[in-house]
Length: 305
Image (cartoon, rainbow, N blue to C red):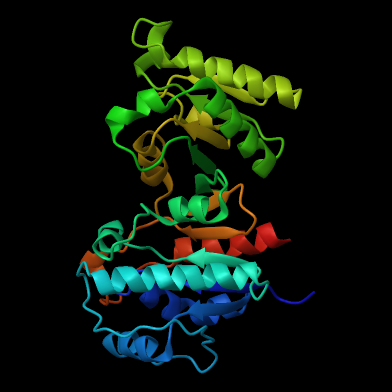
């Protein structure tokens, strides 16, 4: 069996992504055939800033653009290039020139400065493919799928609609198979039977619809949020659905920050990502860890198989 070809979008070049890619190349090349979506000029500029050599087998797919890399700075040029790199990686997957794509971190403010309307990779994928992409993050010990993602907290409650959540749960089931999933409530104490909010009634109805259509009880809840990630509870569940971003990601990153990855589900292509940001504070200092990146590569390969 031939080795998987993985398109790598390099992320914001003012951050840690290219450093991780360069210093991990030897290890990654033993796992797959990486194709880095960047041009040779910017690759060399980054390597020089890092006092590194560009590996001789560092295969690139050319992405136009040239600017001065400025470590740790928010820049519209870096924002635009990270977008162009991502789009090139998508093109490689769509044309079957790559089997999957792995993304390095972008900076959302840099995308905004570049005039881009998307609030992140998943939002772009959702609009590009016109499907309800699901953002799931985690590692083998625990995965968290997010029902809502990058929206203000004040909008979360109104976003919880029975039919919409039921479809989300069914799409998640299609992606992960017959795994039990703990579905978190929104409110403290999961609403205490309506005393602290009524959103849990909608969550319960959505689970009932999903379980009925599946023909098996795979979604459980609404789970009281403050006990969902305790050691005893996690003995019974590997997969969780959080109603909003920090409800699921704060405990995940407290437990598995270095190992965790980001996976986009319900798409016609395979996409995994590191589960950390651009880390501008340590960019080009040789301090960036690569555990999440290696796990993202390995997970992409597993999805291909």
